[in-house]
Image (cartoon, rainbow, N blue to C red; front, side):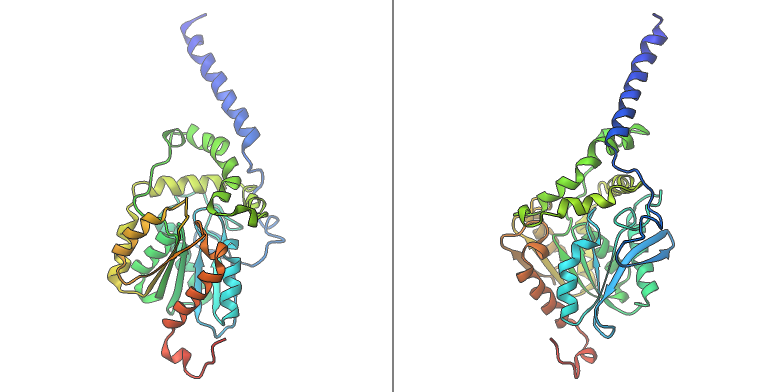
Length: 322
């Protein structure tokens, strides 16, 4: 056997093995198109980078609030919060990031600029050019922090729920390799993401449908690519510097953190509080990464009280709050 064959054959076998693994384990089999969205709840709008899935609820005259989700669970993560806020008279919007839920999965770099552009364009499409109250969960922390820092004239207040903080890590090198990295990501990392969401809870048994709801978005091509790109583009970013810009803006801020968060440890709260000295801070007992779900009885009254406290006097005059 020639030297060339000794080199080529193992490489070919390795490539074939990786290809077979990818074909077997990659959950993405369909395109996100009109057929995929046929029975989806909510609404759709075409923005500069593609179609965005969103919803708006609550009275037209209500104080406007935009809810921004985390790294990969789309806007249904806010179901209980929407119910609480609309019941209290607020006008509430939420949406899916590009690459998640029922939004498009454009094959572009998933940078902080993209996330900011999507949020700004969505608000513009709703006619919400005036100040809104912004709520960010997990990765929604830096997304909303950037929004507040870049567009201080458009934000009345900021609420951070277990926000990503500190310095963003780097994806394992095998996922950053040219060509083969994304293949390995789809075959090795993406398939386990649905079950991995249960670690966000202290008592996951209370949310029996959580894994199955997550799997729906995994059917559509571009989901894994968007998540990997997000991690690669954010690596090395210092989140507390984003929050420091929020702190300098002086915008009223509410910081909520589950004491038993194993995804973004509550020890990170110290850095966020230092960066945003005006933040009202509430650690939540018996809650993990999603305290608004696990302890809605505590979190939602805190949120509603805070939002009412920043409501303009002109909006409260003559109104009887529920």
